[in-house]
Image 1 (cartoon, one colour):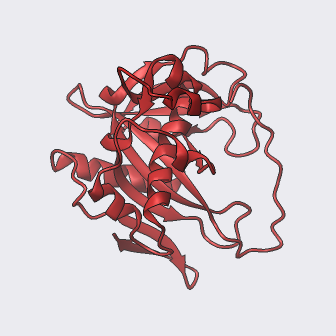
Image 2: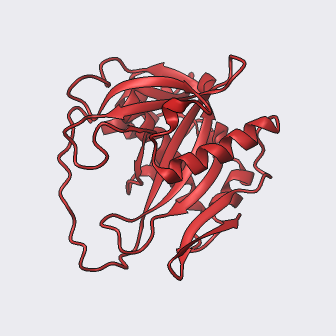
Length: 244
């Protein structure tokens, strides 16, 4: 987004509204002795979390499942994405992974993709937020994504999301769009921060829980789709932690 959006307060008279599917991408730089994650500082004039450091993410778009990709999501990732409740179809799982890539490119200018020799008409479908991919001769590539957690916003909130938290290695960044992050944008600054740093202490509580999960996964070695994925949701007024 080229400018920060003034987000209107939604009607909260229906506390059990259905959560919207959303995806968040946590990019990790493991080139040093301590892994670093990319966070962006939100504009201080937006209503939702002004001035806070966040990870790029947002709702799934209706067209996300129709976008051509360099490689399909791995079966292991698909299995994790369709787990939990409510369940989703494989097509929705693909859309979630693609949405994470789209949001990251749109908000940070960092695009995860793969160069292809022949687009074979795919460029015509890469319009709007996907245009940087077409211009760089890239197709988005969700094959290197891993699911770290799933969390559903508790009932009674103004906005409710069923968010899947993905991670990908910084080496998957294939293209950088200049000028996306600036003083009048949704994100005004990007910072690579070491996992466990005090700089991450001000993040949303759920985000910190997800980062702890990521830290544990990274400590075990190479990421695997076979690893258990925590699923945070609320039942009976209390948060539940299931695994997928």
